Length: 119
Image 1: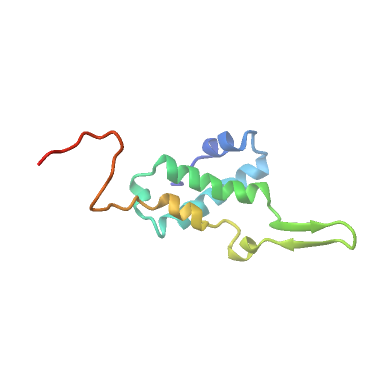
Image 2: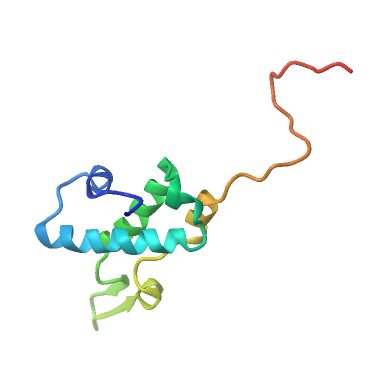
C-alpha cells in the first residue's frame, strides 16, 4: 500500500493524469513509499498528512521533469541530466526527510502565553 493515492497526486498536480502518466505514477508512488518506509517504518502503520505530502512531492518532482534535465542551452545545444537520475529518479531529499522526523523533545520548553506554574 502506498502512502499516497493517485487522487492525492492529482489534487496536488492540478490536472488529470494521462493514461501513461497514471501507470508511471502508480509505480512511482510505490517506489516513493518504499524509500520513505526504509528510514521511517513508523509510517507503514500510521500514515500522516506529512507522509502523504512527501510521497506526492517525490513523485511530482519526477512527473514534472521526466527526462531529469537540470539545464538546457540553445546555441551549440547541450543539456545536463539532474543528479537525481543517477539515484533512481524518485528520491527522498534531505528537507523531506527532516519533515518526516518526529520533533525532538527537550527537557525545557518555553510556551508563550502559558500559565506560570508556581512551586
